[in-house]
Image 1 (cartoon, one colour):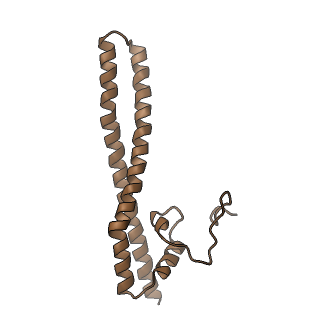
Image 2 (cartoon, rainbow, N blue to C red):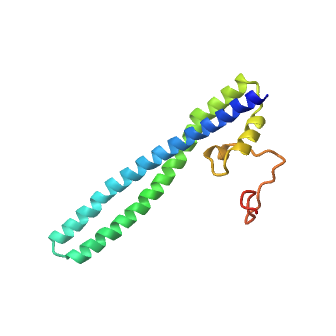
Image 3 (cartoon, rainbow, N blue to C red):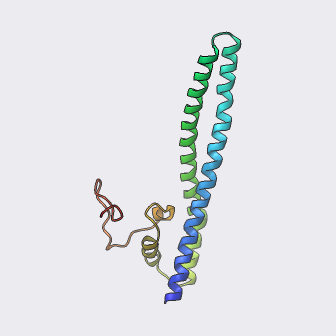
Length: 151
């Protein structure tokens, strides 16, 4: 039983790592693309205003900084959305199927998998969003600290 538990633990950690990797990659791509493409219109607008004489050096620099900050905020929001969507898609089209295949191959119940994943994964692990906590573990009420936050 101990060897089977270690194999299950390794499988859970491996599948969670896949979700982390995909989420990080898509988030980085989206953020980089958003900043790069978003900066072009800001620089173009500042250049046009400078050519027309509406903008001086100080106000141009200020406009560039404000535009860059807005772009970073928007790119960060888009990256967060891309990360969430890529984790959902990877789970639904890859990880979920691999979990089902693993459970079928080892003749395990999904509740066994969920219980073990709940025990070994940190609360912020992406795979935690797709597992059902064991029935004996009460869900924290709103405003109530979770088990990890209690002293």
